[in-house]
Image 1 (cartoon, rainbow, N blue to C red):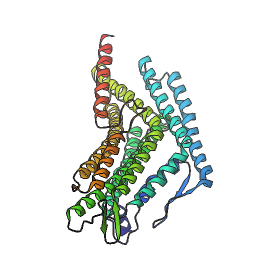
Image 2 (image 1 turned 120 degrees about the vertical axis):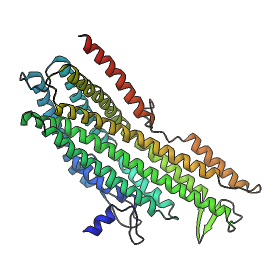
Image 3 (image 1 turned 90 degrees about the vertical axis):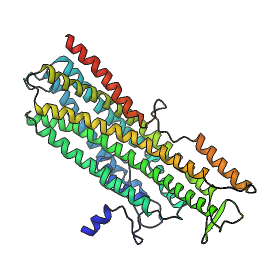
Length: 410
């Protein structure tokens, strides 16, 4: 058992270990299937076999999605009713401003869940196309040691992504049930807030892992470009310009270019499928950062009954939003950095004056990279890149200053 766990979390892939790119997605796939966020079952065969889609299992996944949404619908109604009718001293929201923010937060979580499940079943064919395209593109360039790439991604997914989801679930439950509110209110918060929040994190993890797989494809292209560049510098270069023989295996720039085009096609499909849920998630993140920070400021400045638990709970919710924004911004930066690495490697490939064919292929590859951008945008309005986090935090701080000034003058 210990040896199996060590392999599961190891960044090194053994020679006798048949690890494929799609198998790294398997732990997250189990979580997605439990919540019905993926429309069909997938088999993960060993060896050079394409992933198998089990369309007959769509009914089971639809039932999981229906039960999850039904639970969110019922407790959303109960929670709104509780907020509007409660007259207790420890009510969920004790003034009109707080009630408005509280209901807006509920509505954003509710809307996100609707959009997420709608997109999951509306674009189910694109989901399957993405996974198949990734599997086939990974096998198009098999002539370098890809175990290093797979090992690093396995650690990122199993330790970083899955570990973060488990840690967030545990801490979110602990923060919710550590307060002094009644059991019924804790249950309402768990189903109406915590469950949609976990769905958000799982969806962002789904998106992030798919982006990591595209980055792995591009890293594989970069390794082949480096292999090509080293071979051009060696004495074993053949006069066929764009072809280098490593043993009996030819590697061409055209083949690398085709895989690059496929990787960017997968990127565009991921962009189309996830942009609506991500947009709603970012809207919810912005509102939560402002409202929770506003509650912290009012509690520390003007409220005598503001407890340490309230401070920790509000701060924790702000931290969760920052974590989601960071993951989204990080995904776009990874893609852009890997594309730049491929471009630098291609420009370092030497071509002789008589080697016109190779020169033209390098120029064509470079032009292709220029006009096929790696940006992931939200309906073309803004890209998911590193400046996203700074822009979101700066905008939230500006609105928070305005709200605190209004509160001071009341």
